[in-house]
Figure: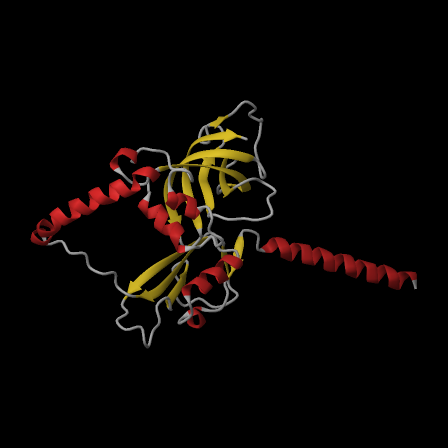
Length: 279
């Protein structure tokens, strides 16, 4: 009887060891969701979500501006998906989690902008009058007039930025619109470190996820801001009366940063840090 019990215990230990080995077998990898043929025709946003949930990190989307009526093929329908350059991949295949995933989808062509000089000259007087009127209307908000081009944008002086910080969905279209409109401009707001992880194989460079507000709050709004590939000392330019030796998740900050871009696939609003004050 003791011999039988010993054999059973040994089998259990062997099984557990085998499971542990399996869990580490695919470290740094991600498994494909449904195969490429299944993804065709689905909404591209759902496909992006599937790959993100499977652990893929390098996901991009590509527009195929070929729709005319949208009756047979709807806007946003996937045409093809490639994983590491392979458009004929199968489901449940393991890849390195940083391989490129490209999702191509159908959409309508953007309206061609008129570049006829004569047309511009005809409307120039009207446009000048409209611009002057607009500047007068927006003077109190210091929005986008020439005088405020270098002004730091805050929720107090810029209604667009105030709206961005109140969105409830991190993929709200107004985030991308704001990023394009104010690319290169400086914004300032209170936020906190929601996540922090090493960038690639570096030991002292990080990708830092920033959310607006204070750490520990029960409601959340605004984009997923990110400082990508930054050094805490040389890039964040920490200021304040009490700078800690290290910072990490949960640290409240007052952030001044330049607008870089919004990545629709990853839903990350990337910023370039200018100065970061400890709160």
